[in-house]
Each structure stands twice: as C-alpha cells, then as structure tokens.
Length: 181
Ligand SMILES: CNC(=O)c1cccc(C)c1Nc1nc(N2CCN(c3ccccc3Cl)CC2)nc(N2CSC[C@H]2C(=O)NC)n1
Ligand code: NI
View (cartoon, rainbow, N blue to C red):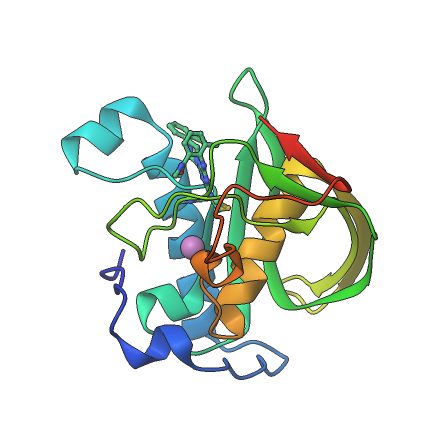
C-alpha cells in the first residue's frame, strides 16, 4: 500500500479529478490496494505486524492520487462487511435536514493528531456512485455509514474533518444534531 500522505501535502487540499471510464488497469489496481489496506488495518494481527492504524475509509488523495475514488469498508458488530464498496465519482444526490455527529469525534488516517469536537454531518444521504466496471449505484445511507461516506467524499474536495468543527465551541451542537456511537 503506497504511503498515506499527511496534513501539509497539497494533494489533501486539492479537488480531485473525475475518474474516466472504462477504468484503466492502474486505477483498478489502486482501488484494490486501497480496499486491501482497509481490510488489513482492521485485522488485529496484520495491523499489529505492520503497525497499521485502523480505518473504515481511504480516499485516493490520501495516497497522493488526486482522483475521485474512495474505498469504504464498514464492518458490522461481528466483523462482517456491512458496507464494502469502492466509490468512483460519488455524488450526494440528497441529504437530510437532520444532522448527526460521532459522539467520540472523528479520526483521519492523514491527521496524526487528535482534533477534539463534534463533526456535524447529514444523518441520511442518498448517494450515487459508479463501481470499477462503470455500473451506477444509488443507495440511501444513514448514521455511521453515511458519516463515513461524507468524510471520504470530503477528501475528494480537499476538505478535512476538522474544517467542520465549531471553532468557538467544538462540542456545541444545535438541537437537530443527533450523536452517534
Ligand atoms: C477522535 N476520536 C476518534 O477518532 C474516535 C474515538 C472512539 C470511537 C470513534 C468511533 C472515533 N471516531 C472514529 N473512529 C473510527 N474508527 C473506529 C475504530 N475502527 C476500528 C478499529 C479497530 C479495528 C477495526 C475497526 Cl473498524 C476504525 C474506524 N473512524 C473514524 N473515522 C471518521 S469517518 C472515517 C473514519 C476513519 O476511518 N478514520 C480513520 N472516526
Ligand atoms: Ni480521512
């Protein structure tokens, strides 16, 4: 897995370019490696052996490739994949008025420090994306999966999670925001 870039690398703040179809072998291979990284990062033995930090999402800009592609692997409580997709050219078609935030805040593989605070996001989204074969998918997502996808899509637009944290009061939330987890 190519090295994950950290804050300060301009690629993290750039708007990534759309992926063209049919996808070339190089981009398909990268997608596979990004998903494999997430799988490895979630395996206690492998993560320990290679000192990997666990993640449920990894966007191409985080491995210094400015393309609109992100791997997402959210396990259920038994460790089976609840949501496992490489999202190519993802678009949020609609979003709930209701907001949600992870009660423990968010972490990012490209941010080697804790940035405390609630990250307000939409509780539900309708997401459109393309898979590696160019097939279109449209799904309604909610709660944790919706939050993770919004975090990863932010990476494609050069946005980092702490950009959303209220500077004055990081743990301030308006009444419409539900806390998750
Ligand atoms: C500062 N407090 C915190 O970070 C924080 C603190 C506590 C709880 C949460 C819930 C927090 N928040 C948070 N925890 C995660 N993980 C929980 C552990 N898990 C995991 C770990 C081990 C094996 C398998 C797995 Cl699955 C991996 C994922 N992931 C994200 N994010 C934000 S959206 C993208 C996603 C991401 O992949 N980040 C690297 N946030
Ligand atoms: Ni991130």
